[in-house]
Image (cartoon, rainbow, N blue to C red):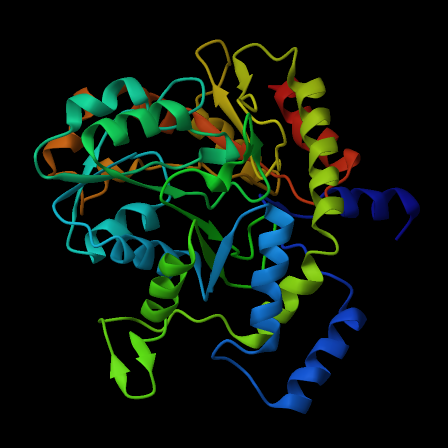
Length: 378
């Protein structure tokens, strides 16, 4: 094979929407050796305790409770607040957000999103509040901060709890510091696709020691002590393997975010002149994590969103339509009154036009040029 053929083969390698960030394997071996030596694999072992403390310091939050995944963390957060009735939420999210509400025997009530932030629109929340409403569950979509001040004012006035799905918001800072310090609880995901990952994992951020104690009890089957079970809990504990990886990942996460920032900026430079393509802006962050790169395909572009999506796939570029289909359009949820598309016009429009382009630490400028060159060729 000559040099030109080799270059062509490399250029045609598949590019996925993301790729997990992993530290050097040789640096992980000493952590594994410690696990083998102490034979503590779970149940709040030494790495688990160290990671909770390290994350609290790094993120600037008072209390962190680690979980085996973000979905169990969401389910437990809702359980910890002893909610009843209805929970107002967004349809423009991953399905785990809504599933967590239903797992708790609660009724999701969908409210439309803001066209700029793509988050729950505070101006529409109050119209959805009923005597059965007990909480609001917004999502910091793509790491863009919700209007936390407006949501807090509404929640206080109506005596509602606020739980933020902050799966996309690791290390995001807003006008008043860490975004994770807002609401009664904030829930993180450390899934392999996230900026900070522990293979699988998640966490709940809370404000006081008593709530942390309750959360930690719930994630360990409800055990208060060896002989007392105070609540119907689950097994949501993070293992020592995941916690050890998390401790090592913290050494590299700033480097990873910086690499993502450079990719984000290069995408914006390349796509600025493409008619009908809008790069979703980072809105409201003092510090962003560049976890996604969503674009909106408008009427001025020659292809529809789905046509562009298929064109990218045909070239070995696996972009994703986050979030499509809209949760309110899934068979499981479409019969809910609030799922009617006439109430969710912005969310439906965005879900039908959005596509997230690949972004991860390790994606280089040549890759971005290959991806964006397709937009110029159409």
